Length: 403
Ligand SMILES: *Cc1c(COP(=O)(O)O)cnc(C)c1O
Image (tube, rainbow, N blue to C red):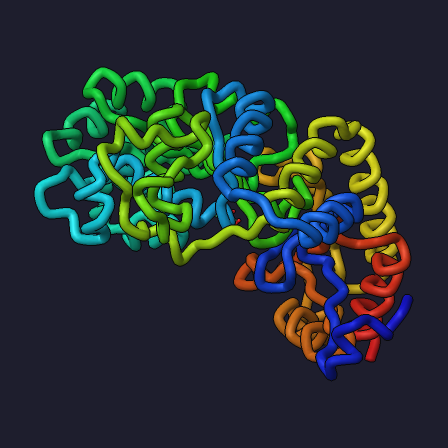
């Protein structure tokens, strides 16, 4: 395994990524074809709205939505989606965001769907109204959120309903969409990490979602700073109007007609709230190429490769006294198989926290998953490892136990 990455050249230790597609350590490995496309994109200029219009067609084709947009990440897709739900085609409201005086600005969410990422919704001026309880999580009751509670919270100040998609989130998305649509409000879905399976590209639009956000830099393996927003043509038009650079002379302002209709907007919008979430031509082209390849990919083969690597890692760690590995392959909470390693400190002589912390301080740093440290567990994720790196990660884990 090479220690001579560009990061070492810069004096920075690189990371052996056994933690999966985590933004803080660089997300996923971008597809080489996407990198190549980005280099070619840098060789010429293009009208960004033309390029976004082309991306919109591809996103529409693969998701079944009317339109789509390339954002600077799933998080910014949520922010832009919220801005579109609040401002619609009102260029005055667009210009005032995040001030929302005079327009509905509440986004209703089941309380169990609140995440750190909903800051993106609040950043553009939305006020989150969360409903339901955490009874199931706390063990204080059997039900978290009832559909009627969502209906009850929707009123004249509601701009949207937001929903975080996981295979176990409740109430079911189609039920929430029916409720929202009965009240005339759109549903924004955060599905950032819900690929693969590829069927999820269209599943949430099929369930009735008005806007769906995916990360471009996770399993799609596009540029790290990309995301996809798929949804209705009117909402995507509002996104474009609030995101595209608007340093434009009105007399000659002519954005791509498939994306934005100046007549409908009644004027040239100001630089919108999305202007600080810029997406370059290289990123848009890289995302387009990566998405094309993602939909052509044999996902069963990819998952089989991950599974095989995970099994091999688990088998090797199983030989270490004090470590108890198991696989999460059939666990509905993970898109990819993962090795969960339970550490018995009495036998291993170290805790899970010692191992995970120690690995991160090495050069190169080795990142395994540390979300379950309080339970005395760490995880090894095969998605972002080569076979050589997997061997190295195992070797280093073993070294921490046996030192
Ligand atoms: C990763 C993730 C995001 C953020 O995605 P970016 O593309 O990094 O902006 C948002 N929501 C959820 C649930 C995620 O897993």
